[in-house]
Image 1 (cartoon, rainbow, N blue to C red):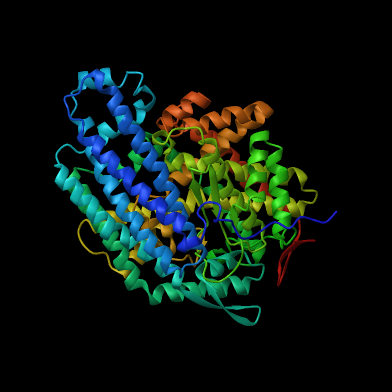
Image 2: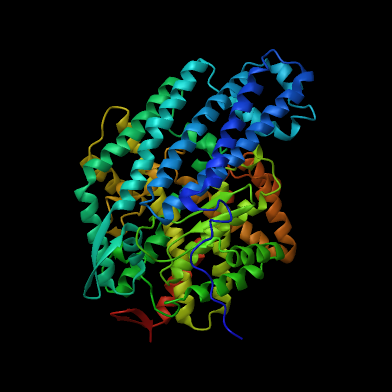
Length: 611
C-alpha cells in the first residue's frame, strides 16, 4: 500500500476562491458592509429608558453583533492567511484596508450599543438581563455595561475608534510588514544562506552550535541596525495607548489586560509569587545543560539546542502520523478533528521564502474550520509548534455551536488549549521512549517550555511594566529599551542566562500587538492551568474529553476564576492552586538533573549523543 503524502500547503480556496483576487471575497465584504448598516438602523430604533418589553429588540441587536463578529473573524482570518503565505501580496494588503474600514464602522455602532446599556438604570437593567431573550448573553452584556466609559460622549468615543483604525493599528501592521521584509545572511555549514526572519529563528534548534551562534549574531546585527525605527514604532503604539487610557480614566496599565483576560489581579499576583519562589530548579537545569554543551553558563543561542539527535530530522508525514496517533488516544472528538485538519489541508507548513515569521492559528467560524500557519523544518520543536497551533484550532472546533457574542474567549484560556495539546504529545512520546537518550530529549523540550513560561514570559512582563512607566514621562530611546530588556531578563532568569538577546524588545511581536496589551502573562496562566487539566484528564480517562469540551465552550461566557471553580472546583486566587502545577514542572527539572548524571553525554559537531 502506497504511503500517504500529506499536503504542506493549505487550501484557502474552499474558504474564498481566488486568493487575494477573489471576486467571491469582494462580494462578501459588500454583504458585511450591509450587515453593519443594518445594525446601525437597528440601534437607531431603540433608546433608553428601556422597558422589559423591549428585550426582544435588544436581543436582535445582540444577534446582529454576534453575526458581525463571526463575519469579521472570517474576513480578517482570510486576509491574515494571504499576507502570511506571501508577505509581498499587495492585493491582500489592499483588502485589509477595506475590511479595517468596515470594522471601524462596526466598532462605532458597538460603542453606541454599550453606551445605551451603560445608561440604563440599575433596577431596570437587572430586570432586563433576566428576561429569556437576554439571559444567555448575561455575562457579556454585563461586561460591556461595566467596562463602558460614561464620561466620554459618543463623538469622543467614535473619534478614538477612527484614530485607532487609521493610526494606532496601522503601526502594528507596519511592524509585521517590516519584520516580514527583512532578509538575514546566515552561514550554515560553510554556506551563506539568505533567509527570512522566520527561517533564521528556526535555526535556534539546529544541531550545530556554530550555526545557532551565527544565526543569533546575524539577527542581533539586523536588530541593532534598525533599532531606531523599531523604537519609534513601539513608542508610538505605547504613546497612543497611554493617551487613550488617560482620556478613558484607566489608572493602571494592567487594568485593561486583566479585564480583557477576565482575570482578577489577585490571580496574577498569586501566580507570579509561586513562580518567583521556584526559580532555582530551572536555573539548575540551565546550568546543567550548559555544562553538557561545554560552557560554564547557558548562552541564549544554545537554549533551544537539542541534547541529542535521537528524534530529529522528522519528515512532515512522520509528524502527521505521530500527532494523529497520540491525539487519537485522548478521545474520539479530537481524533476526528485532527484527521479532518490534515485530510482537508488546513495546515500551511512548507519551508519557503516570503512567508511570515510567526506561527499562528486562524479561525473561520462561518465554515467551522481553522487554518494553521507554520514553517516546518523537520525538528521535534517544529512538531510541538504545529501541535500548539492545532490546540488553538481544537478550541475553535469546540466553540462551533456557541453563538457569536459568546465565542470570544480571553487569551489566557486560549493558551490553555494549545498547551494542553503539547502535554498530550509529551506524555505519549515519553511513554514510547525506549532509551534514556530519547527520554532526555523529550524532558529537555518540556523544560524549555517551563523556562519560557516562568522566566522568558516573566521577563516580558517585567519589561512591559517598566517600559510603560517610563513612556508616561516621554519617548524611551532604543538604548534605554535595550537596557530595560537586559535588566528584566537578568531578573526573570535569576542571572542564569548568558549573552541574552537584549534586542528581544524588537523581535518579540507581542509588544507590537495593538488589540491587546501585555500579551505575555496569559501564556504562563495557560501553561500552569493546562497542567492541572491534564492531571484531571489522566485521572478520569475516556470520560474527560466531554468535560474538556464543556470547559472550552464555557470559556467565552465567564471569568477565568469562575471557569476554573465550575470545572475544577478550585480557587485560582490562592497560591495553593499554582503550587500544584509548579510541582510537576519542578519534578521535571529534578528528573533532568538525575538522568543527565546517569547518562554519559558526548558532544559532537551535530549535537549531543548519549554514550
